[in-house]
View 1: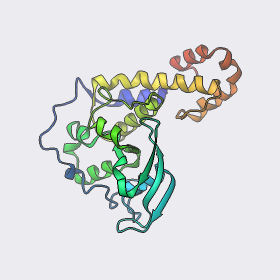
View 2: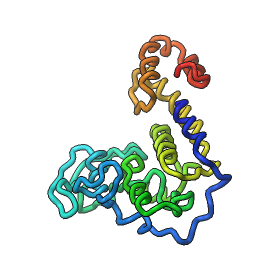
View 3: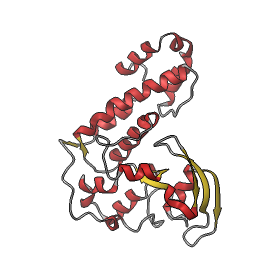
View 4: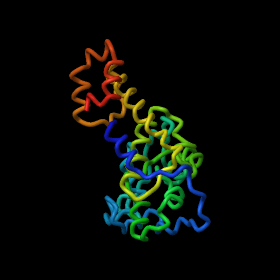
Length: 239
């Protein structure tokens, strides 16, 4: 977690989210789900939306389509935002949507308006900033920053916070000060991961390999006293 907190500290901040710019348009980030981009996975003869659906859905069924040779027509999603399971069908595609973890409108207000069109296209199609979720959660989130919206499923908070930080660290963007609340989320998320592993309840683990090794080596101690490892994590002793 310390690495994530270091990255968070490096991100330039402003006291509050900057006023929404009236010149924002979705088209400023290029055609939706364009394949012709230098983002990871681009130029693979398949649009970004189908790339993410194939990555995030289970029981995927595909067919040849005009924009993708492996167009997703059906699948099953456990939405990370809610934990609920959704059945995806191309005929009712709105049930499963692709969310920009760092919203495009937020990015526009916080620096993307000054980027080149190439950089904006990359950002809009960067798989690190994209996740398949249930449509209602995506609509509820709108373009809100973490200070004003977090996924309903608390178990996804640490990963959501870490992905938000990773994206901001990779692009020249500002972070609003209220959303610095990501820091305790990352740390508390680490604590929950430690507790879950100690209780043999696997969760999404996003820590460093060295920290995972320490967790496994100290599993018996952790079952007896997880608090000691919590203190080590805060002090940095375990990293």
